[in-house]
Image 1 (tube, rainbow, N blue to C red):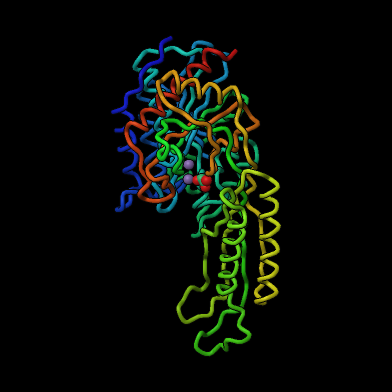
Image 2 (image 1 turned 135 degrees about the horizontal axis):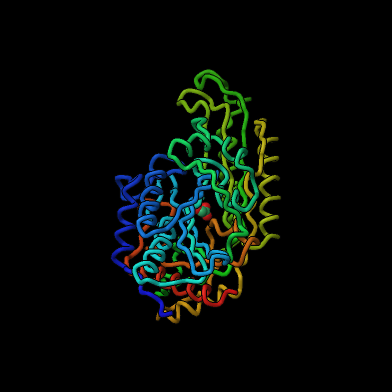
Length: 412
Ligand code: GLV
Ligand code: MN
Ligand code: MN
């Protein structure tokens, strides 16, 4: 079969239209997982897929599977996945591009009357970002059997609203049983979220691995009091202690030159009033590194830091690890196929490791898998000014179609 050409204008229109849901004035997205806007974006994608004859399955975590049948009804499907949720002040392409490129794949196959042996299925994973409900990559982790639906449905956002009730409110609390053994292989296409491809003028990133990441929720309990009367000596100021942790975490990251990353990106101060000594703080520490030994060292350093700050300040510090995503290595045969697909599509490519986490990390070990990257402007992501070009978007989608069809014809 000759590979159908994707429709660059159609893909760009889909990307533009879907970014209405949760659009921010500064040109980004605020589309938290299972929010009304998440529901609207899913409805948009589901409508486009059903219009071309795809069937829809929704599992209890809201993971939404859009299926185009193949000729062999016993064959396992080829799965292409990504997410539609964003960070609170995120961009229009992180995750969203992967879903819309998957939709474009289905549309291109349909409009060119292409026939595949295997069913092709595109999945919208629930809550990749973890910005509203922790942990990140939740829907994919459920699919992988790492949590029960009940356990995850009871997770709450900062307002105490549960994931279960939020999914029900947007009509994405499904009951379809979808399991990994129904699938033969997995692809995820994403913006790079870093500067390498654009800087080097390369069309396609052939992703070989995703670096490991760990999340720690830290609770600091001190003593609140009147800021005008509480003596400076003897204060147990939870925010002052948190400041020492923030600074110490930065030092941990800087001690892993070039590669390591250490961030405090979430902080809740209670009662958060100018004239009250802060009694309680919650913060999240995130550590990333591609090598497990280095990640272990960073983790040990974090625990030592917390002990030091506790004894220095008298603020009680409790820590709970909420995410442990190991470094993931993708499947060599699929990496080769993506590389060959880029060449066959007339595009330049380079092999690279992903610094960002992805739903693919949860799929590793369940089936052969890999990822494809396209450039993004100035490497900026998780920010409202995240940007890509129509040409980059189209290039990636074309390589995705080529790679999926390669797998379809080679897979037994
Ligand atoms: C994904 O959004 C990540 O945090 O890497
Ligand atoms: Mn993403
Ligand atoms: Mn993201």
